[in-house]
Amino acid sequence: MIVVTGMPGAGKDEFVKVAKSLGFVDLHMGNTVREFAKRSGVPEIDHEIGNFATSERKKYGMDIWAVRTAQKITDDSHTVIDGLRNYEELQYFSRFSENPYVVAIFASRKDRFDRILKRDRPDDIRTMDELIERDMRELSWGIGNVIALADYMIVNDDTLEVFHERCRKLLTEKFSISNRA
Image (cartoon, rainbow, N blue to C red; front, side, top):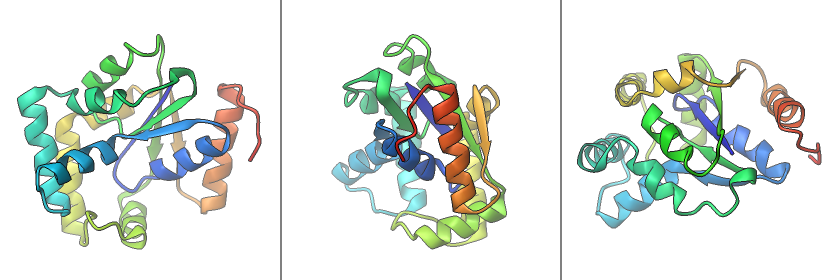
């Protein structure tokens, strides 16, 4: 099992695309959050969904999104989970895989901001101030700790093609995955 972490817009989804092309099944913790938020009538606005995620963590524990996402795991040996935000979530995933590997994706705030504006998801931020607010919220959840404790880090500071190659190289060399992409 590979669990991916990184600040918003760093490139986690792009890492997952490469992993999927190599045969991994993907689970997105953010999709789980959005699914539960929608069921609860939360508007598709970044700070509303973020507040919902925080309130659920306060009610049910810091690992609630891992608990809810893990219900969808079918094969832990070929699963990549996107969106690790704290150590408690990592501990929860350890129940499904003896040694889940953490891959952190890093990109500068400016690059992340530009990428978020381009992807244009309905729940995304629209200003640098909103990104800073979101960064601070995610840091308060403990994301900095899991980034610091990652088994591997990929820097996303070049073209998309270069980043995909870095991802493919890590997956094929460190996880013995055949390079089918």
